[in-house]
Amino acid sequence: MKLEKEEALIEAILFLESDPIDINTIIKITDLSKEVVSETIKNLREKYEDPSRGMDLTEIVGGYQLIPKEELWGYLKVRYGKKNENRLSRAAIETLSIIAYSQPITRGEVENIRGVSADGMIRLLLSRKLIREVGKKDIPGKPVTYGTTPDFLKLFKLNSISDLPKLEETDLKRFELNG
Amino acid sequence: MKLEKEEALIEAILFLESDPIDINTIIKITDLSKEVVSETIKNLREKYEDPSRGMDLTEIVGGYQLIPKEELWGYLKVRYGKKNENRLSRAAIETLSIIAYSQPITRGEVENIRGVSADGMIRLLLSRKLIREVGKKDIPGKPVTYGTTPDFLKLFKLNSISDLPKLEETDLKRFELNG
Amino acid sequence: MEQIQNDSSHKFKLQEFEGPLDLLLFLIRKSEVNIYDIPIAEIVEQYLAYLEYAAKKNLDNLSEFYIMASTLLYIKSKMLLPVEVNVEDEFEDPRSELVERLIEYQKFKKISDLMSVKEKESEWIIERNKKQRNFSFVDDKELWEEVDVWDLLQTFSSIVGNLSNEQIIDFYEEVSINEKLTLMSELLDKNNEILFNELIINNSSILEFVCSFLAVLDAVKNKIIQVYQNKMFGDIRIKKYSADKLSTDNISHENKEG
Image (cartoon, rainbow over all chains, first blue to last red):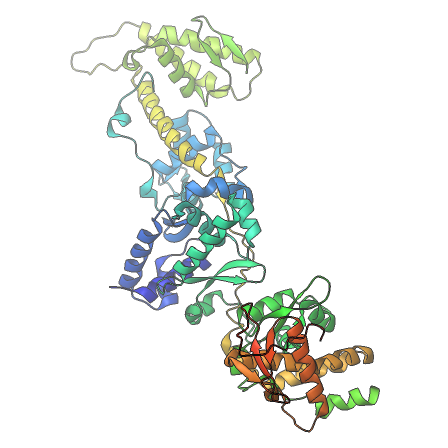
């Protein structure tokens, strides 16, 4: 399939969007079949991989987005860069990691793993919209359980929670003195 | 010259900008020579001409801009077009009528007549190819003068600019009375 | 950064620890002991030394460290008690629960390292200018097609109507020469060469001739056109200006003075 016009149309859509756009929205705008859209996106993505192209077609948070290639950021930073002033602290990342990898999880369970109160950190992560309440655990007291949000995926440039970096199987069990 | 990386960088810049960007700004951001930037833009523009590309690299007053190809606008209008505005703006018609009846005319002269900045409107009309630069006025600063295009004639179903209906009937009278 | 020296002369920085488990992991590593066989007495001693120092420094949030201290002391005391060996029961090491927690915690510390790397990538965000993009998909051809030439006239006429008399005079006087200039460039777009007569639309108007002639002179002066006349009183032929030498069979009447 050549799909020239389809490619042009989807490229224009990706160009006009500033946020990730999901495949169903693309289907709605273009009136194309899901197969054609998927195929076209695949082609486009390959073309954008060429070193002469300035953007990558990335899939994040369930959508597609054109993002300037990272190796160009050095040039682009001055004019288009925004420094993220809200970097997460070590404690926040630890808490967030525990929630991300063990969700749904209650505050008590987080505290048990880290050995310290998780109250402040959970409040911080909630306000940063990186985690949210996802339910209640069916134990006495019915404590709230937490999980990660789409903003979390976006911040860590993940398409889905299954893309979280994995520890090697051996790392999971072994205790390293020099770790 | 291959200029792969330069091409990628300038493409990324054009992607990030939402307004036309002039060549000097591109030179400043990229730290490339004027020759390289011009050459690269030329290459990029040719590549974007391919029917499988969704945008055109257009040169309009104020610089270069990626603009979705016109043949795709039909699809893009619903989602990306400005809503609640299905009539041409008064400003656009006014500006066009002034240029049509008074060409060649400089931007400054248009602004004098309308009493407001004509920058955006002239850019719009240029991008719609209804007007074009026709020369420079022989006054200090040598400002560019604008006139209508063959597309203008086509749109208004005129054979020639001399077929524009004349003011005579209504306003010439006033002119004579007061003259 | 403040530093202390504890009994085992291990240096460590304050506030480097995310909690008691973190501190314990540090002490165990420094002592290079087997996590499954922690020399509790030794570790407790180091742990309490740190705590004592931290308390002196009035560090906040030490309560969790104290809870862990009591756990450690409890384990230590249990280890001192003689174990009643019951062959049927499995021997329960009083340290095992702590060891499990330490291993679990270490796992998340490693994950956090991975996450930190990812998070660091977001130190810079490259953002597009979010303001309304400049595409006017609605100012579209169809919209223009709804406008006809009378709209133009009407609009223009009302603009003229609003001008002061002085503005009108200035304005109106220019129109005619400009109009001829425009007509000329239009004709030259379609044809290589045009005749002066083609600029005259209304033969009965002297003003037409005057304006056309002035337009021609103006265009010559501005190097927009070149004009020739092959015979005396013949029609003037008009061509687009080109920097090339004029061909010899044409007599140039270029008139810079206008």
